Image (cartoon, rainbow, N blue to C red):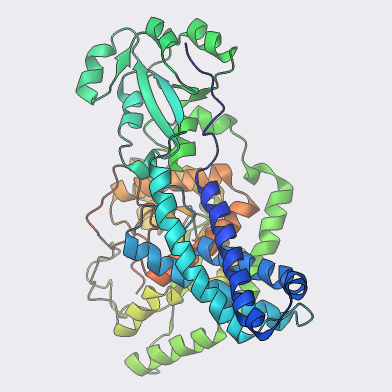
Length: 486
């Protein structure tokens, strides 16, 4: 008999979060005990003194872990990378915790000895737990067991998710072949393939409808039979969106976007987002003033005081409006004199020595805070493209125009998940993440993206540990249509 399961429907990273909170809490309590118990502090005093500083320490360490991308569902770090990211996350979290104590002096302040011990213990405990938990999550024994209705091109999208990090939350137990699909299944590498009558004998928790053509083929009686028994039925678009965190253009129908509700249609959301943009833009302009002065000094020392420091470039903004983007100049003055607009590539000889440093840490983007305050851009959104590229991409990439329904952003979901691109194919892959963001836009998602942008800045690359979408170019190109930025 089939099983209408309720298991495995949560995010496996939730277990990681719980384990990390436990580890950080234990680390701080041990630090307090080691620091004060040996000096005669009573158990009653420790119980009374620990909760407030412990909760602050745990909170900021968790923020640091989030900023380093350690709670991405599809992360697949190496052991060295996991260790480095955990240590950096604890360091960043602890620094934020110290700053918090400085800003809120009435809060219980702990000494440097306790903080140092807590950081050290937390690092080792979090690394150990992470390495064990990642292995357990990969071998998750309570994954959702998925029955796929379809055995054609669309169904193969599920069978192509072969990495363990892509299949942590589900297991495709079988594919139900309808008329004419069985011969194609072998060619597409789909297995095992069964008939609808055989499905009653399989154990599964969810049905995913993945038919190439639903006209006259949708097995309504079959689906309704299991639906009324408590088995959820999910469309392939929704299923892949949930598991991969992008929208697959190969199966996405424009009508699907037409009827989907997005936060962008909410006036309250748009007003709150705009208020957040103005606040963040002004605050960051003030905080990064020292970096701005250093950038100006570096450009002047390398190129002289007569050369321009800032560079203005036309980009396509919301609703196709042309805006001028401000950046620190990172290329030679004559970078496009002979070639015209073109993609930037790894090791581009047009980039100055100062420009390489500015780009490495995204410092060249800081003047765009002016664009954000003016309303040309948002903090989070699809990266704006040059008109010359947009015209070409709109002809070749379906639904490309849809990304211009929102303000472009300083950072975005695509920047966290996909490396720099230098081709139409790369732009198509990035669009899948941009569409996911537009559909799921919220202030919480914006905040998460903003926090995790620290990962890209620190590690100096345009993708997180989760890797790119299937089909993306993995040859390690470091080029982007966000450039040239001469």
